[in-house]
Length: 387
Ligand code: GLA
Image (cartoon, rainbow, N blue to C red; front, top):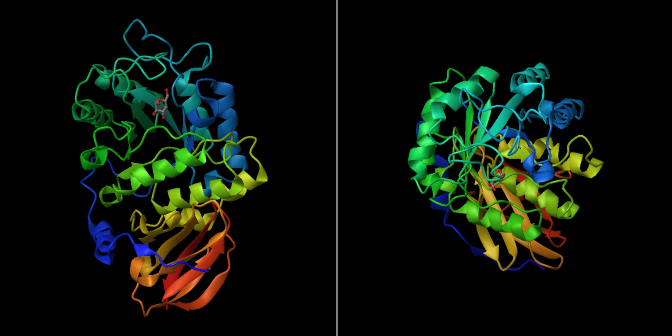
């Protein structure tokens, strides 16, 4: 039995969030949310150039690169403990003996892009490598010389200096470096970066670190939701990287994780070992229908629009008058959820074709509402196309 559900947001709010423009960007990157891979969620500090090359190979061999996953990003622990005699950042000589230029060449040779991790403080969060505070220009020049395409910039050991000052400085430095570098802020949402980062960053974390659990994933989804009006082409809210394939959630939970991240225009940064993933993991992260929702050029972050206890409806506008819809059963039992057109930005009288993005089936001519039953922690995801 479908249960009655209260609308969370009036329709005008959906309209509002779809039309508020992102602040002017200093670079032209991130017109759609970034897609790629990052080392942290699976490998933590245990990374080296052999692993990263293997990942780059797998991105191409598994077909992920063709689907749009383009960045291969090193997280913490790639650099040597101290700067060199000229004060430059240097790769860790034991784990990355060939150096960063060689790694960038390798990754670029595969048609991919290379990202690194830095910190807007004195040292990174692991404390194993230097931060860039006070070295912004020099470090940006070093990254550009290596051919780095992406900087994830963390917030540890920050001397209590305003994040605006610290992050703006690196943004300027990157802009002056002569290379287009995607700028991904990792300030954990502490000082509401959605409200100030849009003018100089391409994405900003809105939450603490994701853990490989259902509780952490759903919590990050909820915390990220309220910042939706600030997202748009050029600047995205970031509820943290994907855990799909890392083993702490069920397949249905991972499918929900991926569906919601796609709908809310989160960066799709894979966090599993793509060189040894299961067919189930590959199926989830390779779903072109779902990826297309994330990469829709309108760039509207979908939102939680209806909630009845743990039965939720998330929706957002897509280009060409379409609507992306997720029915999400976050409760402990199988349940039915009904999405009402009036809650998801459609005229109550609208007739739509409903494309189920996971089964690839199309139900023609649906009017007024859509009811589906699903297992605990599972979701159903649709694109609704008005006739
Ligand atoms: C912080 C970040 C994480 C990761 C670690 C690395 O916790 O939020 O995403 O980069 O640092 O030490």
